[in-house]
Structure formats: C-alpha cells, structure tokens
Length: 222
Image (cartoon, rainbow, N blue to C red; front, side, top):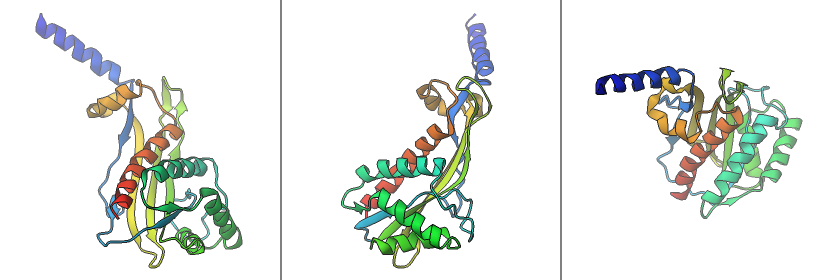
C-alpha cells in the first residue's frame, strides 16, 4: 500500500510538471567570455555606467542611437541596484552619462560601442566605465498560466579600465524559463515564483540582480 501511494504521488508530480514552468533555467557555459575578472589590482575611485546596447557584438555601424525600451529597462535597473551596494566609489549620474552617450552616437555613429564607452569615461574623468550588451531579449508569448514560447534573456556586462581600455571584469547572464521537469533541482525558484511563466522584463531584472551582486563584490574588494 505504501509503495502504491508513493508511485501515485510521483506519477502526479511528473505529469503536472510537464505543464508547469520553472523560474529561470540558467544556461551557464564556462567560456573565456564569462565570469571573468582580472587578477591585476585596479584602483577604482569613480565609475560611469553607460546605456546598454542591444547588438550582439561591437561591429562598427551597428550601435543603436537611442535608448530603447529594453535598453532603458536594464540600464536603469542595473544602475539603481548597483550604486547602493558599492562602498567608496563615486558614480556619475546616469542621466548625465546617457546624454553624453546619445551626443557621441549621434555625431559619430560609426564609433564602436566600447570606444564610445571610453570616450564617456574620459569626458567624466572616471577610472573605469561599465557597459552592457543585450544579445537576447525575447518576450513571453502567452500568459503567466501558459505560454506558446517562454521569455528568454541574455546580456553581458563589462568593466573597462579607462587608461588602457582593457576589460577588467565581465559576466554574462543567460536564461530561458523552462518547465519544472526541465530542471527539478531548481524547485526553490519554482515555488518562489508561484509556478508562473514570467515576462522578459521580470527575467531581466532577476539577471540584473544576479550580475550586480557579483560586480559589487568585485568593486568592494578593489
């Protein structure tokens, strides 16, 4: 009788999990472009965060000249989350950085994204500049109860040393929400989010929080 009951419970769990979403199945791939931090000691007393870009690479001529919806969502969320968590570092106001960003892009649209970032850092005389590159931002098709396709978000954040232009810190966040059966080890996330399908904006904010925690830890150690 006990064996029958356990089997029945397991069967119901597996069947139900096929239609129930899992919050954020993280797609961690250990490549040289992810979770990178320089071993060299870099003194950072001031920083500037520039608007995120929505291109997949830094090729010339592909930089968007204005902050669009998804860029604005991630940029503002990232800035507002990061500033209070970092001690002993002065941040340039985001509005000031955004105005300079648009000014440079409008006058020199051929300039690669990282070069725009370094020009902004030089303009405000900061030790480093933080950039963000959105490579995927797919909206949920459907509702929180059921979807035709789930939300999917991927972006990379880098910290560039102003003097050398070298990347001294990098982290990539990439997630696509999956059914519970796709990864039962993240059951806590499933319970935390009430078993609902989330929007791309919600997924992006979760990613921002994850990356900010890592970056704040890096900056507070320098």
